[in-house]
Length: 281
Ligand code: PAF
Image (cartoon, rainbow, N blue to C red; front, side, top):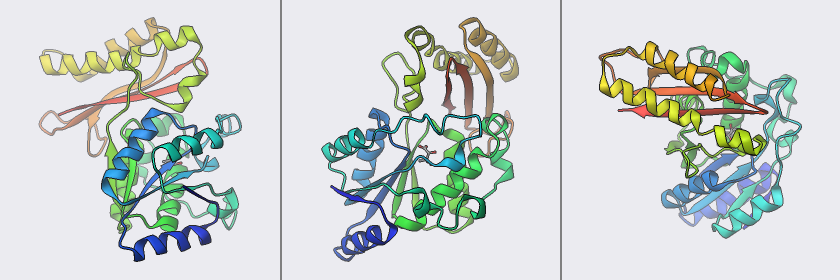
């Protein structure tokens, strides 16, 4: 497995692979890899002959009071896990490589219809940061396919939107949410949970399932089901930020005659902010 730190060496390596007829898949990550990331890597390997994983803790997607400084950075363990998966290259750029003109001069991408609601309400600027770094990585690597996880549901819609709108040729693939045995969606931030919090954390997924079951049964409105589920989360010791049923393609309020829907939730639990979602076909 190659470890590449500059765009120049990355492009040299990629162009040799392309000349040999290989398709390239990119899995963008912020490192501290867990089983969920490795599932993205395996999906990527089914779609392309060469897999590149980027590891970059992107400062522009963290708010001023968020965990950028303390975000877990484990490059050696990550490299070992990726080598064991047969990944061809890991791209580990420094900030100056990703933001060559500096953060304050960086080109911004804004999609107001998708960025300001749900997670965007509690994390202003977050999706602008995600969109700007993902477009940079797509431009640096020029992959045939890029793989993201469904846990970050709003993020994957933002990325699909920018790729379509800006005519980026990369195909975007979204992998199903990877869960622990008790239903908790895998996330690097789960390690912020103490044992008591970890035991309560699956309540988030349970709340989504309760809402989905209520919708399937009929008789109660989506709003009533979500209010009851939010109250249940509070009783379980979580601090929900939102729990809502939305149109799965646009995140507009769910229209009774237009499907699929998605139930999305975010909640704080100790130092962690958990997010999860469930598609309603
Ligand atoms: O989902 C993530 O890990 C990040 O938001 C991403 C897509 C790597 C951009 O920094």
